[in-house]
Structures are given as C-alpha cells and as structure tokens.
Image 1: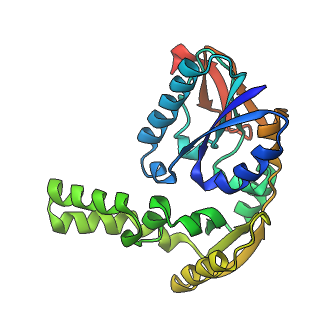
Image 2 (image 1 turned 90 degrees about the vertical axis):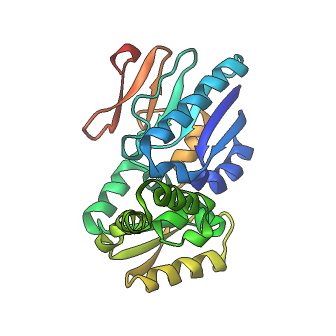
Image 3 (image 1 turned 60 degrees about the vertical axis):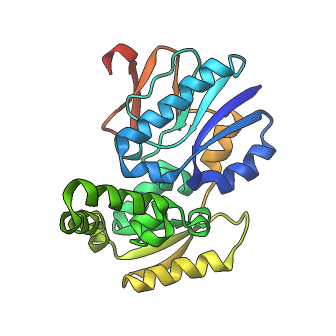
Length: 250
C-alpha cells in the first residue's frame, strides 16, 4: 500500500534508509526543522501538508507523521479523510531513542541535555543555527533578526535574539545521536566542538530506530497514535502523551 509521510528534516537520514526497506510505498514530504521555532506556524504547515495529501492522493492508505508532540505544536492536527499516524513521542529525541521509556530514563538522569543529530549537524540548517546561536548559518535567522530590527529597533532586536539563546544556561551535556547508518566523523567532531565551546560535557549516544521503522512498515501498536477521519490530536497529559478527540472539540 502507499503511505504518505510528512516528516521533520531532522529525521531524514534514517527515513531515507528505512523507507527503502519498507514493504510499502512511502511518499515523503519534508519540512524544515526551523519551523519548530514557533509552534503555531509549524502546526499550520503540517496541517496544510495533510490537507494537500488528502486532496491530491486519495488512494494513499494513511498519512504518517515524522513528529512527536513537539512542545504541543502538533496538538490540534486533524485527519479528515484518512488515518493519521504518529509515534507517541515527546519530540524527535524520543523517536531517535526508540521509546518513551528510554527518553524518560535520559530525562531523569541528565535533564539538561542538548541533542545533536548527524543530519542536522551536517545540514547546519535554520533550527541548528538558531539554537546554537550561529546566525551566519541560517538565512531564516538573519531574516528574523532583520524583521525584529524593523519592528522594534536594533537594541530591542539584539535583546530578543539574546533572550532566544538563554536556553543554553540550562544545559550541561551535549549528546550526539549516532544512527550507525552513515558514520560521519566530521559531524561528530562538529558536535563535540559545539559542546566544548559552551562548557558542556560531551557524550555519543547510540540511536534506536525501532519507532521509525515500525511507523514506515505499518506496524502500529500502542506505541503509536492512529487518528481516524474526523478526529484531532490532543495532549493527554499522561504517559500516553497524545490522545484523539472529536475534531469539533479543537
């Protein structure tokens, strides 16, 4: 069967490998990780892709999301004519770690962790540039700064950009998620250097791609949320992370 996948580009490295091994035809729509900066635009972009797929590919059996709850950004997404499937995951880190349980253990032992992915380090995309304070890597960050200057003046724009980087004070570890799919010493060393520059300790952590593989293979057990047409995604505020509600309640 044909499955449509809407995925954050942070997951593209494992998706490219595992989609080729899936028994199903996987059609991929990739969205930039820079959209995470503002949850509402991210939700709007994902919903627009869902609507496009439903209109343009009526034969697709389901729409898959390569996203977790992502800080609530995916809450409110609606399936109108096809099942909508995503992992029960807090974010991409949960997906890379392979389970909610492993994510919970990592959070319990080292909550102040910034996670690097191979693909994101190599791309140096807008999300990477924003979070690591390297605006010269990202046209999106530069344009945001220029927009702030125009709206609020340079002094206020500088303050806002500094405030957006204040998250760094709460971190103590930089962890590089290794997938084993395309070993890249350059990406590893770049992550190590970024970590050292911020005074964090560095660790390399092996990913578990089980959730991505099962998402693409259609093996949707209780680790996945399957929304039926007419249902919307909502936060569950418990270990299930997400739940389905009638679309009219959103």
